[in-house]
Length: 262
Image (cartoon, rainbow, N blue to C red; front, side, top):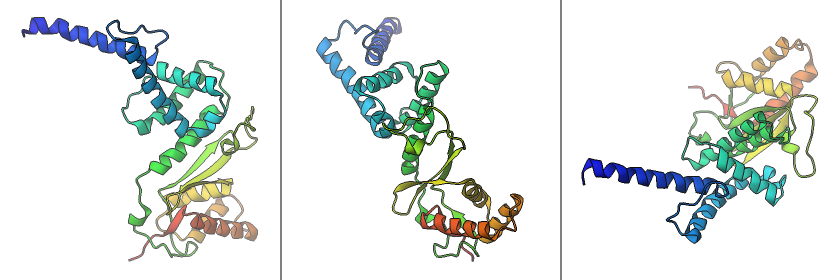
């Protein structure tokens, strides 16, 4: 076949592919390609949509419970029809959904004010469950004393800050206003590979932040330095509370032990 005769054929095929994809994304507004039997086309449109819908429902179970069947399918359909993803990876679709919710917010879609933060919280649990870090392969002393040794924060620990109490949101609790203070949550995946969350205070968040970049100082030294910066260096009760925080983080595998000494 000559190149001249091949070009029109390629153009026709491309037009068919575009029409096929457009109908799958938006069957109500994009006509079905004329040469494809309606029954066969329906199989494709339902299969593709249902795969995305079930994936999002699994990734965002709380958001799913906040919508009835019609509203949920409408939200998914809007994402499916409007959003342009730039990744073929199924594991990234949840992140793309968050971007879509951000776009909806900017366009004044009228979604609940907490929806984007809730989606980020649910995505963070998913991302942490898929994180490939292996605590067992990290050089450390799992029995080390986190007070006198150098604590090692797990790479599977995340401190998250939100305006809304996203960990409490559900069908019976849908806040309309942000919390009076930032909501701080610690997400961590333990040695048993279970992801857990803990609501924490500002002292805990600041201590974790300091320990994440610390490679030389003992846990108590880091704690004392932090309390001094906060103007509370002479508060023995707060120092004892900080020591208890270190123990609690250790128990939850947010601190996996101490940096191994040679």
